[in-house]
Amino acid sequence: MNRRDFIKTGSAALGAAAMLPLHCGVRPPNIIFILADDLGYGELGCYGQEIIRTPHLDRMAAEGMRFTQHYSGSPVCAPSRCTLFTGLHTGHSYIRDNDEMSGRGDVWRDPALEGQRPLPAGTPTLGNILQSAGYHTALIGKWGLGGPASSGHPNLQGFDYFYGYLCQRLAHNYYPAYLWRNDEKIILEGNPGLMPHQPLPAEADPDDPESYQLYSGAHYTPDLMTDEALGYIRQHHKRPFALFLTYAIPHLALQTPYDSVEEYIGRFPDAPYRGDKGYLPQRWPRAAYAGMITRMDSYVGRIIALLQELHIEEETLLIFTSDNGPTFDVGGADTAFFHSAARLRGGKTDLYEGGIRVPLITRWPGHIPANTSSDHICAFWDFLPTLAQIAGVPWRKPCDGISFQPTLLARGRQKAPDHLYWEYHSRPSQAVRMGDWKAICIHPGKTGRERCELYRLNEDPGEEYDVAAGHPDVVADIRARMSQRTSSPIATWNF
Image (spheres, rainbow, N blue to C red):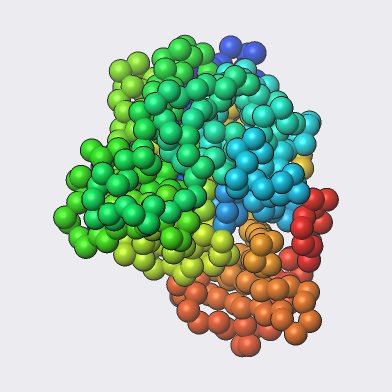
C-alpha cells in the first residue's frame, strides 16, 4: 500500500477514530509543526501583510491550504501550548494561565528559578500518542510547560529529544548564556546571558548603534534551533518523525542579527527604544520586529528546501501557526503600525478575535490540495485528534478536539464543532464561539462587574457591535455552554 492509499484508507475509517496501525507495514507521514510566538493574524503576506516580507510562508500557502478561521488555545503562551499538546481547551486543561510560581522567590531576578508550572506526571500528550504510533518525537525551541528536573520536562511528556528553552521567561532574551539539550545545559560561549528586562544606561546615546551592542552576542538562538532542526530531519528522515519547532519569534525582546534589521532600516520612521517599557532596548524597533519575522520566514524556506533535497516532501506534513495574537504596546513593539491583527479587535491577553485568531498554513504535496483556503472553524485542541488520525493511532480520551483531516485532504465529511471555548484568568474572562456567534463574558460571576458581549462574526469580524441586548436567547444558550467548564486545581482564580 502506498502513502496515498494509506491516507485514503484512513479517511474511510474516520468514524472509527483510527487508521491502519504502523505495525501493519504502512509508514505514516512525517510531521513538522512550526509554532511562532505572538505572531498576529495579519503579519504574513498571505494574510494581507504589506510591509513585512514573508515569501517562503506565502509560497507554503500557495502550495498548500490556508485557514481563515483557526484559533489558538489561549491568548497567552503556556496555556495555549497546554491545549495543543493535551487536546483539552482551557475549560478542562491543567494549565490555564502563565504561572511563574512566584512563591519560589523573585523569578524575574533569580535565573536559578527556571521554568513555569509543570505538566503533571502521566499527562496524556500528543507526543505520547505519536510515540505509540512509532514516531521518533522532538521538540526544538521554547517549551514553557515545566523546568529542569520537573514532571513537565519534555522528555517526560512524550518527546524523545529536546533542544531549546525550558523556561519561557528566559526566552525573552535571544542571546542567553545557555540552552538545554535534553537534561544537559549547553553553554553558549560569547553570549552575555543578560536577564531579559533592563533599560539602556542613562549615559548611553540612544541614537548610536554601538550603545546596543551589549544586548547581542555570538549565538542567536533561533539560528541555533533551525540548524538543530535541519540536523534532526537529516538524521531521522528514514523513519517516521514528528518535529515540533517552537520559535520564540516575534515575541519580545526585539533582537535579531543586523543583517535582518538592515533590510528595513530607512523604510519607515523608527525612533530608538530605550527599554523603558520592559524587555531590552533596540535602536531600530520597527525594523527589528519586521526583520525577526522575515528571518523566521527564511527558516521555513530552509526546511522546505531540505525536504526537497531529501525527496521527502510527499512524505511530510508541514504545519505553521502561532500560539496567540500580537503583543500589546510594550517592549518597543508597534503592532498597530504593522496592522498585525489585521481588522480584528484586540491582541495578546484578549479573548477578542485579535488575541486568539491566528494564521494556520498546511502543506503536504500530493495530499493537501495546493493554493486552497478553508473557513473551517478549528482550534489548537483539534490538532491532537487530527495528527493522531493521520498517524494511524486512536487518540486518548478525554479530548475536546475534532479531527479536521477531511478538510485537510478535501475528502470525507467534516464534522463542525458545536462550540469553541476559552477562559483567561489574569484578566478574568470567558469566550465561546458557536457558529457565527461569539460571546465574551468579562468578570464572570462577579456581582456588579460581570458583562457579557455578543457579536455576529460573519457580519462583524472586528467585534465592533455588541448585539447582546437584542439576542438574549443566544446569550443564554452560550452562557449554558460556558457553565460546562470544570475548575482547575491550580487556578489562581475560578469562575
